Image (tube, rainbow, N blue to C red):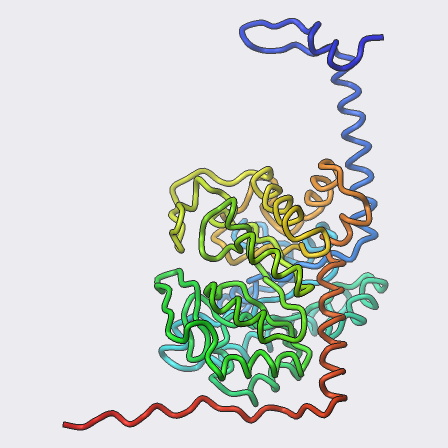
Length: 407
């Protein structure tokens, strides 16, 4: 019997095209169907977690509702497609744009978006429930409900108040991205979207380090997506709990400041943290994001699934299988997503692609959500340990600016 290589060699070539024997094509089709069925089963069994979805912006600004499938093609997330995608837990981004740092109203914007998440859970209790702990996520997975969690995107939302940080935690916020594209009053940002990188603090200021320590004490995950490189290193030196990159990809493949270098990936693994791969074209397509440009242009072709999976594979190779997850950035990236990953219903494709690349069932489940669930569990345990040791809430404040000299 001819082996596959022999069949390829025996195939007829016309004008550069290879005509494969029908039997070979049929076997390949059957094998692929079997792999897809296996992927579907694993995806159903896994706890699938996405750590960054910006659908909260249309909820707030456009009165969008998650309960009805969006047929317009404008939005990438709704409950029907979340169920099709096998999504078990979504971190809704409490995204506070940099203009609120300049113009005021940052905390109010955050509170309004938090209220929107609770309102969606109230409207759709059969499908969606606000979750606060890793145990909640596991419980709701068994109940066939989607866990709604929240992460503040932009540390200026706390308006330099640790009291406000604590209030956000009590309201259900379980991570905070220390900066957005703007450097705030205590942490330097990588820049982007009209905000040049500004090294005002050489990373974290003393108050910024207090923010990280208080997040550790509360049990709120520290998110280093968007921060400047020096801020990243200051966070890892300061934090006593694992940290996350809620929606970042790999700088070795797409050279933009929002992505993590290999040294950062290794350090994140040593910290027991996790990088959640961002799906945005500008962070996974080297042709799209020119080296060193924090704001990718919009002229190049859409990224492919192979490009996206290359970032998963690179992070797995460098950081290890225990330190990689999903941070889609759905509804926050102008629709520029890889072909085959256009909306939340396409998440099972990740499972299929990981299996196709030879990863075990156990390892695939880690990437789908197990790694993030482990980090959240460890952050909660670290907080209990700190609180039991007698660490009190911090009363740190940013020192007042020195008086300006008068003429």
